[in-house]
Image (cartoon, rainbow, N blue to C red):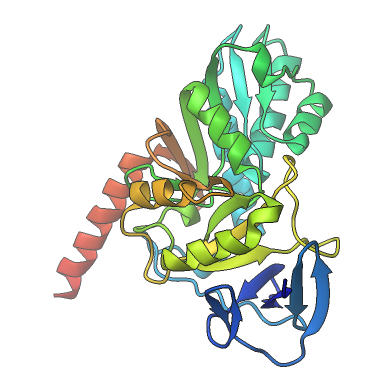
Length: 323
């Protein structure tokens, strides 16, 4: 049997990218680039280029967020503020779902502070990743296995993108499969974001992460292209080769040019592909989204619906003033 060759390029963001033009992998055409070196990965031979500059484009969001809003210096105080606000929802005796990522990590820390101060007692938590479990232990939050609980009272998590209907893209931390299980079990799932994560349409700036069984990577890539996507095998930043999830699978980031028109249908169609474990579209799962926003020097934490309404009003006022 002839060996398959998938030509990809390694971007500055640590993502292996395939382009659809010349070389054939089954019925998937992938383009040639200059400067490739061969890397064998299981049964799949990767031709990896030297690092290229990432081509992500920052498109307009709902609000006129300043360019610096995407920087950690701007985001971290907002993440901390929304994490503090969110853990106020925790009551004694609750079982809490702990998300994965920078904002969720701050929520774990803030929950630990409440427990340490004796403000909430008898808290048990279900972690969605090794990282979340380690952080929970570090901050004094008792963790239990998912299989040992019948229900989760409340779950906290971050997001990579959220639209005005509380549809969410998650998976930047490669834990979206476990996060979706925990969030679906929770009576209430609370998503914590800063204003830069609120978008008018999903998929314009952030790809959809898809967890894939390693032996099925080639047919899954072809199927994702058939859905109109541009799939990228996510590469690790501090090790050679691809990112491997806590469940032992690979992650493919899929861009959809023009954004995602029907998130629910796309979530369903991706999950129907044999070899896909789960994708990062969270549709109909979230009950609350808290948005941290900066108003001059004041940090505000508001509900997503109020945030969107405020942004729409501001846009209408701007249009009236300019006319």
